[in-house]
Amino acid sequence: MSRPRPTFIDTHAHMNLPEFRPDPTKAVHRAEHAGVGCVVNVGTQVGSSRRAITLAEQFEGLYGTVGIHPHDARSCDADALAELRELCAHPKVIAVGEIGLDFFRDLSPRPMQVEAFKRQIELAWEMSLPIVVHDRDAHDEVLAILQAECPEETSGVLHCYSAGPDYLPATLELGFAIGLDGPVTYTTAGALRKVAARVPLDRLLLETDCPYLSPKGRPRNENEPAFLPDIAQQIAEVRGLTVAEVAAATTANALRVFPRLRG
Image (tube, rainbow, N blue to C red; front, side, top):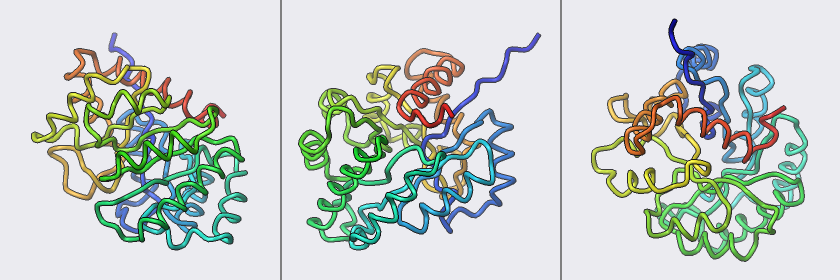
């Protein structure tokens, strides 16, 4: 008798963005065939947040988050926050995100990024939702804001964790989960694999960030949820576990971090 296939949750995808080329229906079917039964599409603007909800209404296994990415922090005004607040009431919206700081590309002025980050943390607390945090080249600043602004009840995930092993203790102390994506499979990702080995198994989440960050051996910027098992395979090898063990742990973690996934 064959063993049951592991099942996964992709906790960070962008099928709601125009850059996602595959047909959503076919992509959902390929994901299901690969054992990925649940996909969270993450908002980056008000429009993409609405699109995440539209997809969630069309497919049983799809959910969404709503938020404004630091690249678009200029748009995080009172009207945008009011609309996000309304969208948070949808039963298939599981978090506020993708929010945070990006000091690598600096597409919005840093003070605007900081203000948008703080306001959306407030929104998440008001709506009793976890947060999905973007942090690129702003590790000290992100940690400082999370430490200062997040009430104890606030939880969430450091998406596409890139701060390296040195920042891991402070991040874990906040109670946040660590999201790992395709880069953990790259030949040059020695520091990230150290993170994958050291994160407590009950704090680890799997993400594709599709259509970006394709795992090694997959077409660049043509990523999709069906490739999530590639990431699980790499983590399993680093930790000396089976893929099934990684799948079971990360699925349990996702259901805990994002309670609305439990229905």
